[in-house]
Length: 387
Image (tube, rainbow, N blue to C red):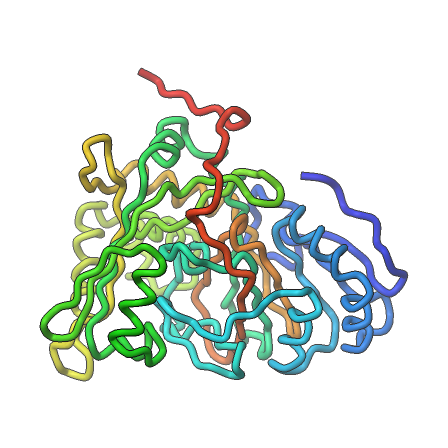
């Protein structure tokens, strides 16, 4: 990774995060690139910088993977949207296939997640199971969290290089299969009010296999290799899309001091097979909606082996991935008016537990088709297997 670029304006300075801005230390020292005002913090200054030099800012996004605009006076969703438009992000106004419930703020701005505050949202690239996904994802801190609520980010090339040769080989050579189930009563949320005919057309356009059920619910799935070459930089990109409670467990262990004594025991000492069984049981219990038996939306991921059969990560592989994610994550405190712009192909993100108040808005755009990406060349990332 290169050193800091030279600033193009006396009105801003460039740096990386300082230790006192982070809540946990890791191997990651240069993500994100921080851009802050020298003196004048007004939104007008930020708007002028972006208007004059949008190409330069996008070059830095390609190079570093994420930019954090910190210290500028950005007040609301409209100004957040204006920043992204000045960066020439072609914003999307629909949010189909989403797993998290969100609230629409404007035509192109949403809340980041309405997930329960005590839960971790596992590291992932946005819309990681959908062939058409954003290449740019952004967050805006409209209300600074009282405590916790970080959004860790991970350079996926560094993450992949931190894995063992055997796990690298599995990721590089075995396609992942994504299977999604959406019950009828949740179609409105997942597909934002599309009719059955419109949903069918959308799934056909993106190359999904799908099956409508008699009760109006739907299963749909797709498969692809999750390692590809970045279309601009040719860097290796690892689509972080593995759904496994033993991966997330490593994150809970590392922030265990935020939870009760009994939860710390649960995360740290329960045997892995029992932990996974309990987590699956909790997921099943969560399918009861408003005391009814309506099933919730689910997403399962598998590796397809040489025989085309579904296989899951081993316990050792899941633990290895979770530990590598944590060691390579940049975990920093949100500050009021922060805008984080990420290359969604290079960089994955997460959410740690939080306590209200906290309001993070999000937007995304510059859609790209994963099926158009070139497979990653492992000649510069050699993968070997110990036999």
